[in-house]
Length: 158
Image (cartoon, rainbow, N blue to C red; front, top):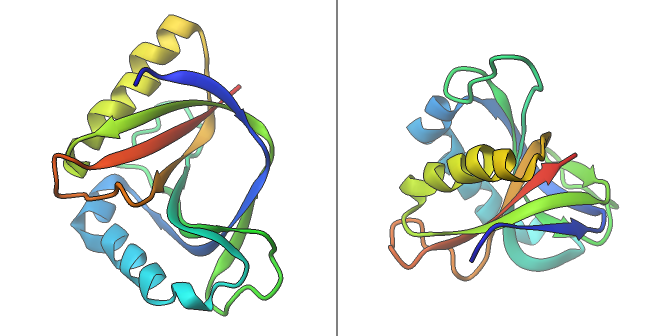
């Protein structure tokens, strides 16, 4: 699948938020947040489906490097309402907007190649600019350690 531009309606996620850089996330912080979400998913009311959403919100500053600089990650589920947010969790609403979407195929450890393509080559070729956040949808195809793994990426664009 090639990267393509789409428009998505507003949506809300309920889950856990952490602040970290890529090195901290890869050292286990991301897996801990994911496991916490999975173990408490039945506490989240009004879930629309069982797909985990990993949202990443970046500081829009010159020279930002995700390996070094901390950014916000939200592990959650899309919900139909923000009523009754469980203790210790947050809700985050994303307004309607434009995105580039791309499906990463292969090991999760190779996901950086897909992000490099979207944020690099695709943005340059289409004269688009990132808006400061992206998200992934981990559905039934999510098998991080398998070459059959598929993750849908959505990068917000201006």
